[in-house]
Image 1 (cartoon, rainbow, N blue to C red):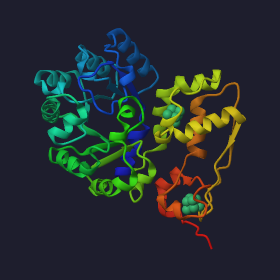
Image 2 (cartoon, helix red, strand yellow; image 1 turned 180 degrees about the horizontal axis):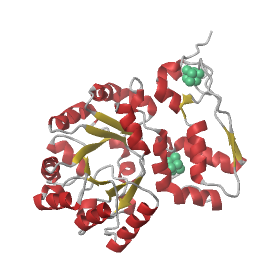
Image 3 (cartoon, rainbow, N blue to C red; image 1 turned 45 degrees about the vertical axis):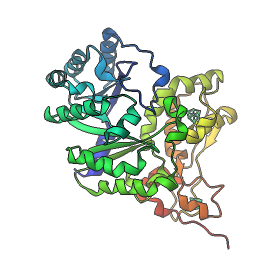
Image 4 (cartoon, rainbow, N blue to C red; image 1 turned 90 degrees about the vertical axis):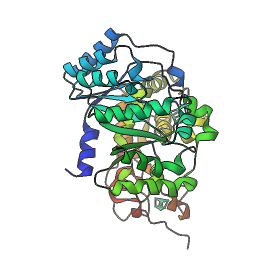
Length: 376
Ligand code: SF4
Ligand code: SF4
């Protein structure tokens, strides 16, 4: 199966995200979870009930997360229950520190854990702990990674790209490739939680980071290496358009913010995060469209850009109705409103008024489909 086909298959699988704790043994400088970390461990009956419900709803994969999932005192029982409930794949997202304990890692293997996604944002101790803000976390995480490899888990690494590490991104990935890792997810920061408190230290521009990103993304040419991106603006991936995140992933974002969007649509309570953060948020155009829909009661497809040599015939309108469902609107947004521009649009006479091309056309054919129209 080709890399692309494998990726499409992975995207289409129904994954159930389950939070096990609201506490973490790291204190990452960009943690998005700051506001929900109240020190709580989710009780076992609640977790088991969620697992049962997810199976009934047809989820085939479960992703155990936190806070930090591995510090749940019953983590082994939870993995075992998930496996016995019939999930094809049980995955943990972890900073890896607890996996430094040989016995715990071996017990997780016996319980049926299949995959561990490590959050590792650097390759050298000093930078690693500048980001994790937890002394000793580097050595423990390294040992955890080693243990995970020895126990035969599927292992992959999440790297959050920030001003602190973008220059070293290729070095970081090369380091983990040498240790045997073959799959990476490169995440863009979101303007929430600790990340927003430290925004000046963390935020970076496309201009300053492009050559480092491109160098890191060259690794994608290797047949044995899988790279995903997460929330990385499409413009950052010019030349690597096949790495633009599937727009379907916006479903995860909307799921996490659903209450807030529903409150806005039913009671008119504006999203609490609306303001300065929006400029940097992956949901910006979606939220703008939602507000437009609420005010005007209907919204139409975006027009194709004037420079496009082909036309896709997908003109449609979405009207606000009593049975409004945020996910129906998200489908409309993805299919008819999710357009992206290239840096080259700055040279175009329509640069300010145009919204660019449909994201799927760009993913499929690349930004080269956009041909700036110059002033005559
Ligand atoms: S774009 Fe939407 S989700 Fe993002 S900060 Fe603004 S209101 Fe919140
Ligand atoms: S080059 Fe960019 S701004 Fe110009 S028409 Fe094409 S998409 Fe629009």
